[in-house]
Amino acid sequence: MKFFIDTANLDEIKKAASFGFLDGVTTNPSLMAKEGLSRQDDHIKAICALTPGPVSAEVLATETEAMIKEGRHLASLAPNVAVKLPLTMEGLAATGVLAGDGIRVNLTLVFSPLQALLAAKAGAAFVSPFVGRLDDVGHDGLELVEEIITIYGNYNFGTEIIVASIRSPQHVLRSAILGADIATIPYKVIQQLAGHPLTDRGVADFLADHAKVADK
Ligand code: G3P
Image: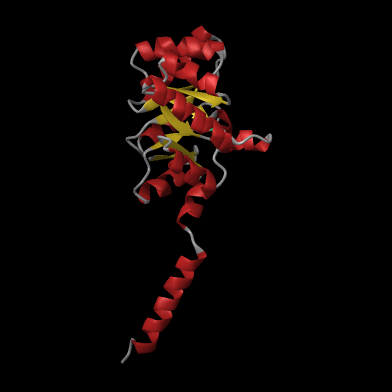
């Protein structure tokens, strides 16, 4: 299972990379805005320099031709850019063209298994089901992931599933049990994955016991 970080914050990406298991990065316009950025070219280049893995950069255009133009521009910024497009009819049409250019496309804002089926048929390299936002409206987001895994397995689609909109370690755990290809995880949740109160207590106990005999 690959771990991406879901952020546009350079410090968070550097810290995640230092843990040794950063396989890629996903950004979106809201995450860019959080960094105070409207124009993103230099920032995307800076992120791409921090990881050899795919870095999803999202288009702002909503019409097919404009998406293709913007997607080609984003892909020219660095070899590891994956162009992120919304799963709309326009996004699907743009996906076919960009994939034909050899550009990896990540189809995002996916909330149904049929949208994911269309993403694979369009030639997307990645599909991003948003589990947290589905949970927010009373659905089980991971059920969607399970359905996509079944459909892709039925037809041997090569599109990789990026579980997105992750809010908790449970989302990561259930994604791993289901066999999702990738989880894109906010930095806060990455920290929660490693932490356990019994680990902290165990370290403190070991050090305390060692201190009792250290000078003997
Ligand atoms: O990459 C986009 C996705 O992960 C958004 O998450 O928390 O805004 O639903 P969230």
